[in-house]
Length: 273
Image 1: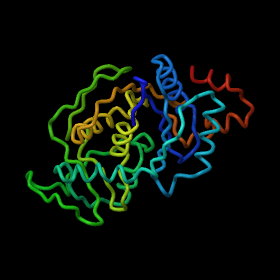
Image 2: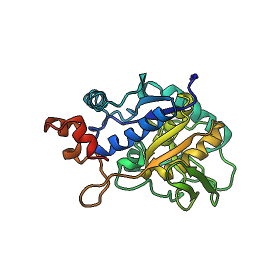
Image 3: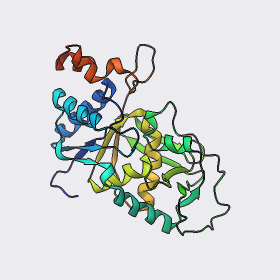
């Protein structure tokens, strides 16, 4: 996807719940950076989870963004309509020997479907139970099998974050072999993001600091797929009165709830300043 704009940012909510103040805080930063650069801000609906993604959450998301004055360039992109693109990328990884078949628990796989920040903890370091011995293994597709990316153990993945400065994560220590494809025919969060950023022509990703480690994983995928580099700007997380990161379980801080309570747009925006 090409454009005359040199800056292309994106909003990427998942319709598994209502937007809350934490989303708004990050989205406002994304909007500000796109406006300052004279660029575009796109909207991606990350609706790959067939069980938790709901049409009503998509509708509420669109209403909340409009009410908050967060503008984006149509049309909205929905990941559920782009599985073919992800499949091509997966097959490229398979043919190049970057991924291997893996048998994991259903609970583990369900967690890998979402961005790590949607769970209590980041994706755990894989214990290697299905990792092939040596570097020689089949590159043919094994039907009804999950696939993991074989990380280069010991390699330090470094990048300069636009907000948090120099970052480094060690493959095999800070993160392990991560899921890229599920046996039900859907990609992981990591693979879908990398493919989408490239296909949408995104130049900078603005998202929460809980995804710093995911950036290291995605940089490895970008390199393996020979995709363009992307800049990153991770924002500090909003927390509740107990110091816990805001999540979709914080219904009292959902934008829909705050609107129903009669708060104005200015009232809500003041809560994130």
